[in-house]
Image (cartoon, rainbow, N blue to C red; front, side, top):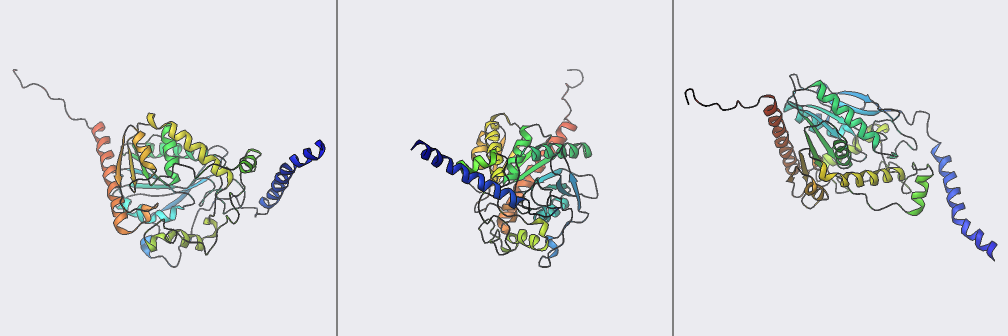
Length: 359
């Protein structure tokens, strides 16, 4: 009887090992260059000029240690920038969907950089299916933000550096600031700071034994007929809500589907660390989001955070309907102007008042 019970207790573990072996075989079926970065993109024929790359846009790659290189894009003004702005994209979001915003910010006199995280967009992959959002840790992303923000500060020392994090990019931006990123201001745009539940027992086991590149769910790959951001209710604007899908149809290397177990675990660890560090994060911060969102608790815990509520905004306010997007831009512009004024106040302090002669 004890022998039978012993074999029954081993059965679940054997099934897990068999599943892990199958996953290893499947994960090795990709092409030889599945991990390579993608440093260019073809304009979708369905998009008008307003969504094309800004004038002078250039792509580049940044590598930190042994981590996969990350793709960034940058465009500047013809004169010295008023501010240097670094944008971190959201989950599975590519830099291309930010072209309209970058053009607007360039017109306001700012140099703008857009950075994609390792393992998604046009950045190099850690491994696994190319269209799987996978990262074993967010530390590499945080290190890249710190390096790039330092480069921005050195390139234009008189201009403030503003870090904008959208969605999960807000979590990475917050952690980068908490770890010493040299920025004058932090903008959390509809930030995603809380994981959607914990991993199950078998999922945690797979991640611990080095199989974190396993998709969290079946059918996690990119699909041409999958609902776009507008259909999913993430954007209230039909054209902007279809941008991501349009760029991915035209550029297979940009296609992203679901997330991996490792990514989910890395998200949870980063979220816990970010929450623990909120009271000591003194960088001037702006929250741009719909009222009642999860960013409000974080803003309340930050020593120097202001809110610019966006009534009726969806999770992607930068791609939302004109009224929301205009309010989003207005809040962002006001914050940037404030940081410019703060930097100039340090550079050119007001003269100290002196008594009149003879008094």
